[in-house]
Length: 565
Image 1 (cartoon, helix red, strand yellow):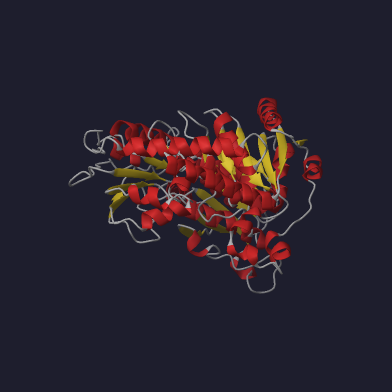
Image 2 (cartoon, helix red, strand yellow; image 1 turned 90 degrees about the horizontal axis):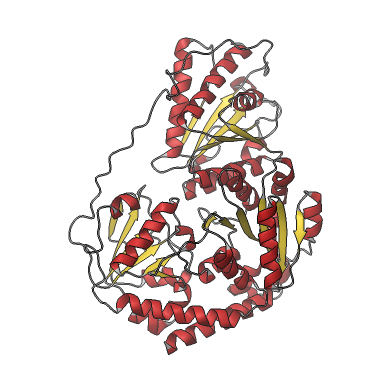
C-alpha cells in the first residue's frame, strides 16, 4: 500500500460525505491525521474550520451540527488527542446531534509495544457513539473505492437519522503520510452529484389512534431540534385552546396559549392542585424545571409522549402511551376540533395566572442589573433572526424561569444532553459559523473560564459572537442547593471563587470588552456588538448571595400575585 492509495481512498470518502450533504468539518493539528486533514481541506464543498485544541474543535463541530441540523465531521491525531473529543461526543449522543468523528491511529503493529502517542482507540467512546468502525485502508482497487464510498454514506446517514448522533471511524494510517506526486483524476462516484448510497426517508403514516383526549388537556414542550415544529405546536395549542407549557428550547414559547412562567406557578400548591389536567401531551425532551417535573410525576392523568426517534424521557415512569412520530407529521393529522380542551375556562385560568406572575416578576426585578433581569431582557430584545446559546447551570434555568412568551422570539440552544458546562464557548462559535443571523451567548463565569481557549475562534476564524457574561465570581447555582449550608468547605471547594478579570482574557484573544452599569447600557452594548460583526464580551457583575435572595423575592412576589389572581 502506498500514500497514493491512502489519499485516493480518503478523497473518495470525503467526496461521498459532501455528496450526502456535509458542509462543515473541524480539524486539529497533528502528524498522524495529515492524510485526513488534507483530504477534507481539499474537498471544495466542505468548509474546514481549523482549531488548536481538540476539545474546542469537537464542541465547535457540535454547535455547527446543532444549528445546521446536518452531520459535521471532526478529526484529530492519535493518542490522548482522541480522548479530548469525548465530552462533545457524549453530549452529541444524549442531545441527538449528528457528528462524524474521524480519529487517526497508529497501525496495529505499533500498538502496545511502546510506540509514542499510541493508546487503545478501539471503541474509545463506548456506548456514546451509535456506530464504531475500524477503517483499514489498503490498495485503492475499484472494489476498495466502492467500499469506501459506501462506508462514507453509511457513516453520514447513521449520524443523521434514527435518532441523530455521533459515529466514530478510526483510521490506522501508515507512513508516508504525505504524497510525493499529484493524484490522478477520480471517476469512481455516481453520475452527477448523487451519493453512492442514497437514503430514502420512510413515508409518514402517523395517526394519534384511538380516542382523542378531550377535557382538561395540557401540552408540555421541551427541547427539540426543529424550529418549525415549535411554531406549529404553538399555533395548534392556540387553535385548540390548550395551555402550552413550553421550555424556550422547544421553540414553542410563543403565541397566546404559551404559559411562560410555569416554573413559578407550579410552586404554589393550590394552583398546581386546581390545575391538574385529565390528559398530558409531552413533546421533546423534559424541561429543566423541577416544579414541572414534580407536578408531572404526581399526576394521575394519562400522559402521552411524542418523539420522532422513540427516545424515552420519562424518569418518573408515568408515561402510559408513546407515539414514535415527528411532531409536524402528527399535527398535520390533528385539527383543533379533534383535540380540544372542552372546559372554556381552562386556558383562560392558566393565562390569567401567567399574566399575574409576569407582572409581579417585572415589578420585583425592577431595572437594576441582575442575572434574572439579563435573561428576561434578552428574551424581550433579541429579534427572531437571532440565536441565543445558553450555558448550562444557572443561565439555562433563568432562561426557562424568566423568558417571556412572544409572538416570535429568538431561537434558543443549550447543551442539555448531558447538561455539562464544558465546551460552551466553542459550541456557540460553531453555531455562529453555520447559519444566518446573529448569535448571542449567555454564559456564567465558571463556564467561560472552563472553555476560555474557545475564544480563539473570534480572531483566528473570524466568527462573530456576542458574549453576555454573568460574573458572580464562582458557582452561583450551588447557593440554591443544600450543600451551601456546609460552611466549612462550601466557599473554597464548591462555590470556587476565582477572582479572574475577564477584560484580560478579552485582550488576549482579540475580543472587545464592555462592562455596562445599567440596563440601558447593556442593551446598547448588545446591539452594538451584533451590528459590529465582531466578538464582544459584555460582563455583568453580580453577587452570588444577593442573586439567591433576589430569586427568592421574585418567587414570593409571583406566588402572591398568583394567589391573588
